[in-house]
Image (tube, rainbow, N blue to C red; front, side):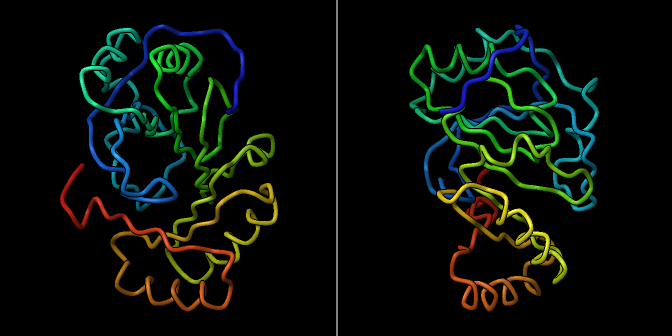
Amino acid sequence: MIHTDSITTHQLPVMEHFYTIQGEGFHQGRAAYFIRLGGCDVGCVWCDVKDSWDVSKHPLFEINHLVDLVAETPATLVVITGGEPLMHDLSALTKALKARGFETNIETSGAYPLSGTLDWICLSPKKFKAPLASVVPFANELKVVIFNHHDFKWAEQYAAMVGPSCKLFLQPEWDKAAAVTPMIIEYIMQHPKWELSLQIHKYINVP
């Protein structure tokens, strides 16, 4: 569990929130409540939630109200994502979630400092705005989106920086999956420290 202290905020801009199945990475297949925060300046050209980028478009939610909504479901796992969730101070949100017994995961590019109490950090580094060196060692999971063959070198760069227990995943960019997935499979067979991550939520048509 990662814990950081900072000035807390009691409202956060929420693009969407929903109970679903985690579709990718180490926790794939688990029931999870997703909280997608608004705001991102990483600028991935292939981002599938570009509507999240402009923080002003998204309503502010009182944290206690948001946690109450999570508690109305059978969820035990909460995934905080974006956008780029670490643009916001997550101390109050994660404290409130932990107080209600929820497991807290985050999916982040690592471009901003860590905040909050987090049980699992999924780091997905992006070339458009690289992770902070201070964040990388805390990653429990490294998930690199592969858009073309140059991205394997990018993946190895960060695999060399994370801790020895960090789980390593390569994930095809969705729109190029037909071309990229066979490349990833061949790469993993030659470099078995990596595992394949697929966005199964898109195959089974859940959020």
